[in-house]
Structures are given as structure tokens and as C-alpha cells.
Image (cartoon, rainbow, N blue to C red; front, side, top):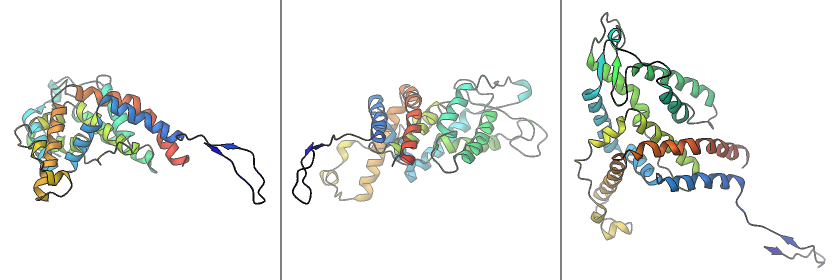
Length: 283
């Protein structure tokens, strides 16, 4: 863009040219957006975040998650069970490191949060150290789930309660809905999605129990609702939420739901470190 300027006396000034261009922060953020669009996980991310933030759907998922644990969690005696070594849990440790422990690198107290989360993850990995593949198994020594007990596998219900409390914080957390044009909003959703879909398939199994729900279809949305004036606001938003639930279920039906978020995390987690630095110091 060419500008010709004159000073206060009317004398012509040297010609100046302005080249319109994105700043470095926007260029960095656009990479994240393009990767997300290419992988096609923005819409499932929107749908999942919305479901986990919706009261009755989130409560139903919590219930289904507990049911899955009650049905499939095996409680065994560690004296007669082979436990995973730290090397066998290397994938889970790396997953937790990228998607949970270092999920907020821009926070003021990031180091304190990371130390706290590492302690939490150590407890979770120890609890599920007898699990293999998709098999959920907890080796319960004396005094583990029931303080003061002198026998292993003292109370299965207590073990299930403890398992639910440990996994709830990251398998079905409440996360904000991402915005495609706000790169910092996409990051926490994708990290949570990568972690939730790869932790023994627990969230996938919980969503599988939602197949019987009659969530309605897009054709059920009226013309009035489409223009922003639904005749029954409560019924309209319930249908919208169930459409998002159905989209989430459709996403979790396929194994692609496990490795696409991992690809995103491998590529974009490092880009987001640069993005947060630019956001903090470059603006």
C-alpha cells in the first residue's frame, strides 16, 4: 500500500510503503488451526466439550463411567498378580506428561501445578499397574482401598469408588468449548481429548452406553430455531445438546478417535509453547 504524505508546510515527503501481513503470533496460531482442520477434530472437540459442560449429559456420563468400572474393573491380590514395570507404563506416563501435567505451561504457578499433578499421576498409575491392554485391573494390597484392613481385596465397592475418583478428573473433566479462531481455547480440549480417548478406552466405553438415547436429528430443528427464535427454548437446547452427544458418540465409535488426538498433541503441543510465549511477551 503506497502513501504520499505532505508536511505542515505542504512539502512532499518521501514515499512510504506499508505491507499488510499477519504478526508472528497469528502465523503461529494459524498453523494450529490448519492442523486441527486437516485432522478433522475441531467439530468432535466442540461436541465433546459441550457434552461435558452440560449438566444432565455430564451427570449421565459420570453414571455410565461408574457403571463401566463396576462391571469391568477386576480387583486382584498383588501377591498373585504380575504388575507392570515403569517401562511397561511408558506410553501412559508420556501421555500424562503432555496432556495433563504440562497442560497449563502459561500459568503463573505452572511449576507448583506440575508437581501436584505428577503426584496425582503416580497414584493413578500405581492403582492401575496390573492393567493390560483394555483389561482394567487393580492390585489391592492390605490397607489400600480400606484403611486399616489387614487382608487384600478387602472391599470391591471401595475400590470402585477410589477408581472413579481417580479417573474422573481426566477421563470426563469439565472443559471449555474451543473456538476455531482462538488457538488457546483449542489446546486444552485437544489435550483432554487425547488423554480421555487413550486411557484404557474408558470414555469410549461410557459413550457407548449412550447409543440408546433418542437424541433427535438435525431435521428436528425448526425454522424458527434456525433463525434464533425457537418456540420452546428448553426443548430446542435439549435437542441441540443431544445432537452434539450423537456427534461425540459417532466419533468414539471409530478407533480413529484414539490416534487423531495423539497426532494433534505430537504436532501442536510444541507449537502451543511458542504461541503462549508470544501471547505472554509479544503482545
